[in-house]
Amino acid sequence: MLELIDATKSYEQGRRTVNAVRGVTMRVNTGEFVTIMGPSGSGKSTLMHLMGALDTPSGGRAVFHGQDLQTMSDKQRSLLRRDRIGFVFQAFNLLPTLTAAENVALPLLLGNTGRRTALMRAAECLERVNLGHRADHFPDEMSGGEMQRVAVARALIADPEAVLCDEPTGNLDTTTSREILTLLSKLPEPGKRAVIMVTHDPNGASYGTRLVKIRDGLLESDEPVRR
Image (cartoon, rainbow, N blue to C red; front, side, top):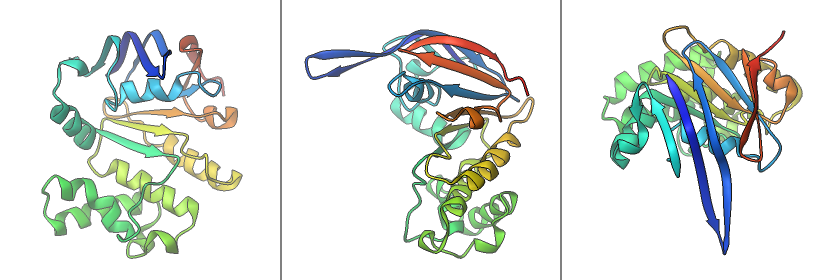
C-alpha cells in the first residue's frame, strides 16, 4: 500500500546539506500497525512525511497504492492527504473557535460535504473514540487526552486507508498515553487501513505489530513486535 523505494531526502541548512533520509526501502501493508523509532534527528519524522505525501523524496520513490507521489501535482497530493490519509500529531492542532464536532467535521466541510452530513459523520467518529458526550465542547474545555481523541476522530472522518501519527502521546501523561495507544492499536484493518506511528517511547512502540528502527537516516532494523 505505502512504499518507499531507495528514498532519500536532503535539506539545505545554511551552507550545510543535511541528509535526513539516505536510501530507505520499506513497505507498509493494510492491517499493519508500524511503529518507527530512532534518536532525535535520525530522520524518523522525515520518513513519515515522505510516506504521507507531506513531502517528496530528493531521490528514489514514494508510492501510494502503486502511484508515484512525485508524478502527482501539488493539488493531487493535497487531495490525497485530505481524502485517503489521516494525520495525528503531538500538537493536537484543533481550532479553538470550533467545537469538537466541528473540528472533526472540518476535512469534510473543506471538501464541500454538506454541514449536516459532515456533523453526523463527526458524531459517529467521536462515538468511536468515546467522546460523543463532548461533541459540543470547545478545546479549552477538554483535557489533553480528550483533545487527542478529537484529533484521532478527525483523522478517521474520511475513512482513510492510512493513519499517520507523529509522537501522538508526546504531550500526555502515562495513563492517558496508554488509552490513546490502545485506541490506535484498534484502527488497522486488513484490506482497509494501516497505521504508522513515529515514537521515541519503547512502551508505545510495543503496541504496534512491526517495529522499524532508523538511525542517521538509514534503516537499522525492521522486524515484527514480540508481545
